[in-house]
Length: 182
Image 1 (cartoon, helix red, strand yellow):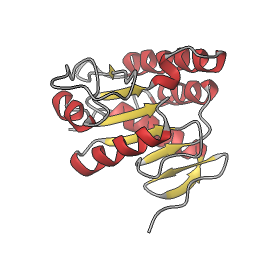
Image 2 (cartoon, rainbow, N blue to C red):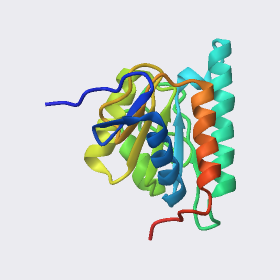
Image 3 (tube, helix red, strand yellow):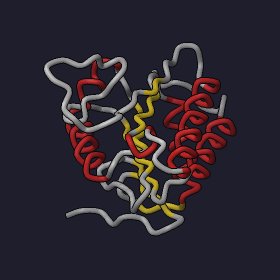
Image 4 (cartoon, one colour):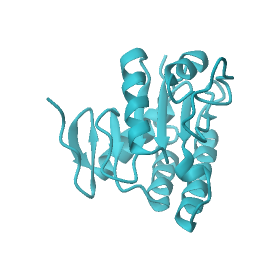
C-alpha cells in the first residue's frame, strides 16, 4: 500500500495531499524548529549544466543563507552537497559530504533533525529517503523537479528556483514564531 503523489499545486505531508502553501508553511516551521537544519543539494543543481540548474543553485544558496539568518545561535544550519552517487569508501568525512548509499551516517554524525533533498535524481532520492526514514528520526523534505517523493515526510513537486525562493520567503515570514525544539 502506498500513497498518492500530489497534483500540480499540491504537496504531501506524511502521505496526506495538501495545498502547496500549507506545505511551505510546515517546511518553514520544520527548518526553524530544527537544531541542525540541513540542505542536501544534488548534482542536478550543483553542476550548472543549463540555465535552470544555475538558477536553482542560486536559489538553494539563498535558502541556506536565509535559514542561517533566521535561526537562533544555538541552531547549526548545514549545507552538505551530494555531487555524485558514487559510493564513498572506505571512509567519508560526514561533516562535508554525504555517502549516497549510507546517508544515515551523515545524519547520525551531525545530529541532523531536519533535512531537505533538492536536485537529487529521483531514483537516488528515493533510496536515500528510505534509508533515512528507516534508521533515523530526521524529518525529511524533498523538493522534487518531477512528481514528488512518497518516502519523504513532506514533498514538493515541480521544483523551480521560484519555488525554492518562496520557501525562503516563508522562513523569513515565520522567523521568531517558532524556535528550536528541546
